[in-house]
Amino acid sequence: MHDDVRRPRLREQVRDVIRTQRYSLRTEKAYWYWIRYFIRFHEMRHPREMGEREVREFLTWLATQRNVAAATQNQALNALVFLYDKVLERPFGDINGAVRAKRPPRLPVVLAHGEAQKIIAGLEPPYDQMASLMYGAGLRVTECARLRVKDLDFSRRVIIVRDGKGAKDRTTLLPGPLLESLQARIHAITHELQARGGRSVIPVSLPFALRRKYPNAGTSLAWQWLWPSEGLCQDSDGRVVRHHVHVSTVQRAVKRSVRRAGLSKPASCHTFRHSFATELLHRGTDIRTVQELLGHSDLRTTQVYTHVLGQAFAGVRRPLD
Image (tube, rainbow, N blue to C red; front, side, top):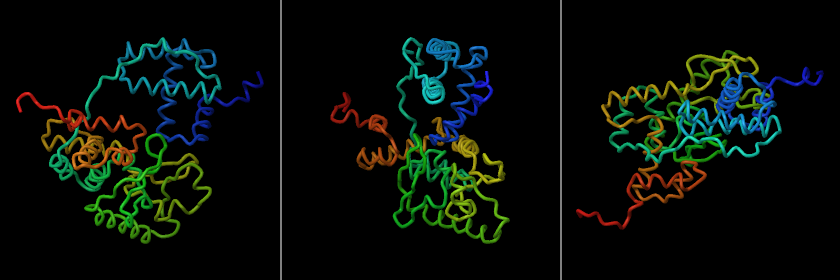
């Protein structure tokens, strides 16, 4: 009984393990959502009292009753695997009996160059600049929103993407047409820091223990967000900080511009990334290079863009030709 009293609550255990292993905050929130959902589904039983059978029941219910997408079910499974393996130290046995949501094969939606430019032209600052980077550098919307001043290397004309999907870093192209506007953006940030000066500068949010190691990093130019949020928030230590612009704000702006452009395609922020890949392949870029620029671990993920271009049927003569 004394051990139960001293043992941290499950939420705290999950948080501590996730942060020790340097998972992103988005992953932490998503994993805890599914762990809590799993507990509520089984009428508030503690996960230590459950196992493979209860996990199979939960995953099957998601697929058959909730009709969730395959990616959603996989995220729920990943959260529970993490819980039992890393937190409770009771790795799963066999859960193959669960009904799995099917992932139908779909080709990504892509934009012609003129269509992409029309959407970008309909955006107001700073969203036009952000959409231009998603299209010109193949960035995910989250990666774009998280860019800091130090992540732009103007001398090498590259962008360093920090802690991308899968907690991986990579480099991608810094588009030439955006050099002047991005340098002007950094100049404006520099001017604002100098105008505020000293202690009146609200520090930006920093990853993990960096603030303790570098106390002044939050107010330095290098660590400033390229596109900060208008409002303030609190970090995990309760300090008032400025975070980057929220991803949903960018997504809504792009959706509005797509509607105004009158496009029949269901385009979104991620469509710019798809279009970046297809444009590179269309212009003869090697698929391995495209894979590296996109940060794909598996070449097969990149190869889907060859199907969009029709290159998978190279050499096949059309009946009406």
